[in-house]
Length: 434
Image (cartoon, rainbow, N blue to C red):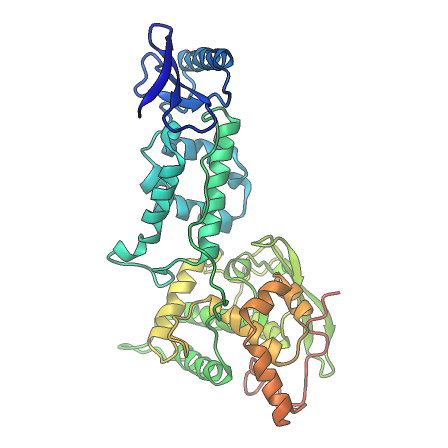
């Protein structure tokens, strides 16, 4: 870096200068702190020389004092240490398990491998640009990637990562480690047309349900079939999949669900219970959700299969030791199950995941004429998100109307074949969120 109009003080340890090509004539300073390698280079944000000299010498005294006191300063604080300090002091430590895992996952995969050994004071806007180039090519350079990994990450995913990084650097400014946070802007633009979420249509869901039931009921003998514990896990997985597609909950919301969160609120015309789920704090905060009537049956079957862990504070989806299921384990199990069928990918060749159950719930509800606002409230999302990602449902609804094929007695695609022999039975008020 070429310096012009340089002025040196404190035996050469403080230098005030201008950068070549600076349009506003702003002065900068460069500090050399004893017992520390590298320089502290910052802008004084003023074109006045005497004011700039005062700012530079004040900064020199302040940083020198911090170093003498053994405190962390941006000149030698590496990002890895900054991240640890941030997590210990920030609300990440008090957030939900899912949120903590999200922070830890992004840090271990992306932030720490790239920024970890870099000095915080040396991370510039250009460094951030280099990070995005590295990040966009990350999974294409990995020998083995998980099923959920995308070679081209979604714009929303990158936005979330950018927001996490911003929080760290804003906190670093507030603590005095750096003068300003680098500009963190996601380089990619969202697609002009939203992508359709991978889900299951009615025939695919019927096929999945039958294969799942057959897999779960495989008999155990000396040479084949699951042992007792594995059979129990299969049963739990079976009910979990059916429940997820009948409730629209997010995987982590179901993981945190406790028996005390499930409240009976009424019965339908046939005496079947309608339940309300007090969804724990998750991605969009706590809310009330009313699932389909079938969801209550699946929960009841789980309860009847157990002899313990049925208290209000016990987890609904848990193992023999009472600990809640792992979302990662369930996701992997679901992916492996689909891989053994012809349902792993949708008609657009996109790989389905555990979230496809939530997307299927939304699609089925819309096809049955549920109001978009009611559905958004029940699922804990916005009307905009429903309209953006499930816009393909409306043409199908209009096609049925124009073809005069709307029948009051249409079967609920989520119910089991033996759930309601009378196919005209509906679930009154199942999305009444009042």
